Image (tube, rainbow, N blue to C red; front, side, top):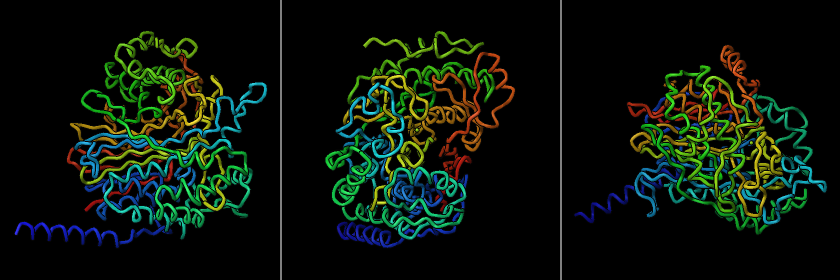
Length: 579
């Protein structure tokens, strides 16, 4: 009887899986609405595009877990959000997995990170972007074929498969359909394509799907037939459908057209890295974030430098709280410039950088009444990305949480579209220190630790983060924004954990940013005028700036309902699974 019962149960599960596999993902790519916040019960996906978020939730509804949704959403973003969603770039993933599937090495409730950052090609070398006089040629590191690092996104997606439930062919099919049949673009997307047209034409030797004779307008349909063919090769051949065979051949051919240096061997040799994430306690919470070459270490430094200073009593966006947070940001970014690099190539003093003794010493010259300056405040003494990135926050009904930030670096990356393959390539080589002390496109300076070297990963500001409360997901957060990413995540966390702002206000209220150099506070429109005036009196320089923060936040409420919030700064959208 027991054997018969077990057999019947297994048949029911098999039949259910077959039905789920047969069900198509139904979305309307020509009529969709942007949803800025939702409250739901059984899961949510918040991403840069409604269609991608909807794909992820449909996967949840058909029996997938958070990792299934993460895979499908990333692939959909590669189609519907070409300025940052990608298969020609890279990214980071942090996850809290309640019960990892098909993995004996991780116990229930394990926290993991997957690094699929781009790497420097084998032919790269330290001074490759300097002219004969040693002057940096930043155009070469930022635009065109020589700016491209070996892509990691596809390998990263396949590194997630062992934690998923549904067949990969089901997860990629929505992206194939969106590329093959097209989708309507918004006014914001039309403007972005129109503004980039000259750059597309300047670096591409063949026509691309992103340019046409007339201007793009809202409601136009963007069809990407070549990209659909590439996705089909990945569907049918797995990661080899990208890193080997026809797609690899097309990438290498494209490289040769514009003096790029990626080879078939570079592609075939690419590997992801799965490792323990940055993990630290902040009061009653556990915060997990991305280890090097990500910027979780910088987030940890900033959170720990404010932890014992009763910032809650100072109040949200008062002179006192902004001053404290600015000086914390200044010190963390000074350390970033000097010490951070790929730990496989350079020794980074991680334990010291986040130790209580070191962080207390970093704040010894903090004056609550006046501004410091970056001439005096340098990195500590230790003896031993246009900013186009995109973020996805996901949670499922079982409490699996995934936080993913991916990037092409600048808007549309290098602007190079692989002829015949239809996808954009990154310009991540600019995230290396082209020359020590010379700022990259985001104004960030670096030292020898982040110099170009074959096979090395460049330091990234990406900071996908999950906050746990009693070992259960409470917040899932991340944002694009180049060097402003980490300060954006930092301020969003402080807004909720210390100032008790609502999720909507924590994401959308005006923010500010300091990155050591240049020595100024960048502020958004709407930043309190009196606070600005008082900060100037304290000795700060204030700079008005339009930020590209597009924070995707999920918050688990006390009643276990799920709130998803998509940033008002873009077309980002939150979609929930209610039943």
